[in-house]
Image 1 (tube, helix red, strand yellow):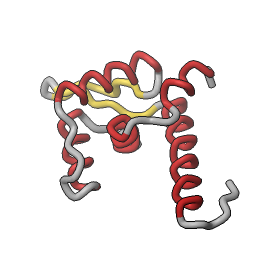
Image 2 (image 1 turned 45 degrees about the horizontal axis):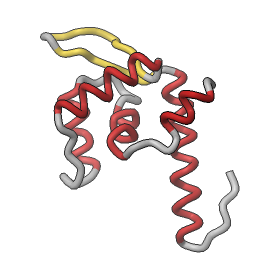
Image 3 (image 1 turned 180 degrees about the vertical axis):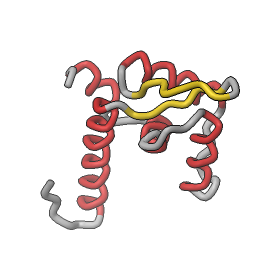
Image 4 (image 1 turned 180 degrees about the horizontal axis):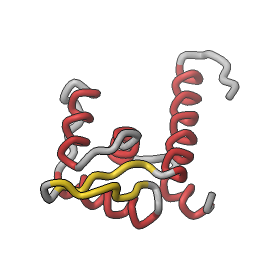
Length: 107
């Protein structure tokens, strides 16, 4: 993995994490927003500007790709690189959680 990309995305903002996590299945921006609201019991809401800015950056960086366009909606999904970065971030979050509750963490 490109060290520059790792530095940009790890640690990941909460918004970027939820967007990338949601794109393990193909979705459009509105669908991502709905998934995030559902996952977080409406505690996290992603504005359209943030959503589409993040999608554009992630696509440019190769973390997601455009799968197809349906009814003027762009459908995205994570790439192998995106999955790799997501796994690194998930491991980091698990380590933080384990350490915060006093458990030893081994990954």
